[in-house]
Amino acid sequence: MANAFSRPLAGKLRIFCSWLGITLLLLGMMCSPVTVNAQLKKGTTTPKYNAVPNSYNFLIHTPADYSPREHKSPLVIFLHGRSLCGRNLNMVKKYGVIDAIEKGKIVPAVVLAPQNPGGAWNAHKINDLINWTAKHYAIDTTRIYVLGMSLGGYGTMDFVAAYPHRVAAAMALCGGCYAKNMDGLGEVPLWIMHGTADRAVPISESKRVVNYLKEKGKTNLLRYDWISGGSHGLLARLFYLQQTYDWLFCHDLRQNPKEVDRNFTITQQDLKDVYSELKWFKDMFEYD
Image 1: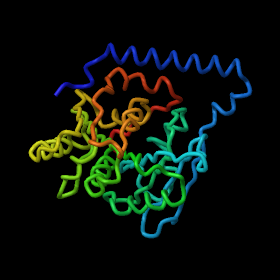
Image 2 (image 1 turned 90 degrees about the vertical axis):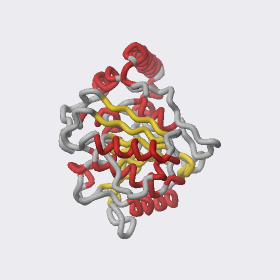
Image 3 (image 1 turned 30 degrees about the vertical axis):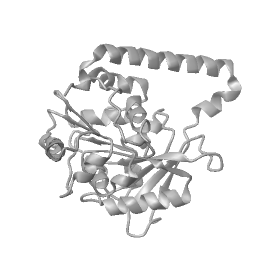
Image 4 (image 1 turned 45 degrees about the vertical axis):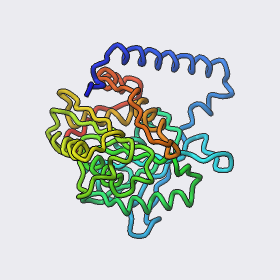
């Protein structure tokens, strides 16, 4: 298949358009001082301990424009890697979706970021968290998205394999799948990415999933990219990239028949430039 990382010209054009949009936004804010505070609001992130019996502690983020009486919001579930395991929810802010939001990324969704105390992610516990969130927040249950890296990449695919009917789209980064029956992965728009130079989780783990789906004839909703020379930590940049969220949000459980979007591309230049748009500290989590 064609590798999406081979289109530098399209990437440069998209970056230019992104910077142009940011410039126009800033000019608009300068001309309209009354709206500055609203533009800069990031929303609210709340820690939840022991909110769901026999499940995970988690962070829940609501965007600045969250208005449960007016409309329901999509739900994004972020599953972290091994280095963030524990019982201190501040760890979950070290990288990923919540960190991207705190560094300026606008994610127009409720974000659920559980913390795994250790071991493999449990798909049923994640499902319990989704049920709790849908009960306490105005969630559009046709627009639930899951993405994770490393151990969270395994968790993403394990959850999709167990509950494909709940997920509108998923992105699994440098992970694999522990599920014995992976048929459910072929029922959801799924984008798998892995670096060829990953020293923490071998690319063979992702390739095993792809080969399984090929053998089963379940690749209609599958996208996958092997990033040439990509390290384990390189994939963390995807949480800070706009195309990641644009791709997820263009899918919906109401689509009939289901389709996977193959128009959005992510280039090596996109990954190289993403941090320049955000306040960032250097930490690649090479062995997450």
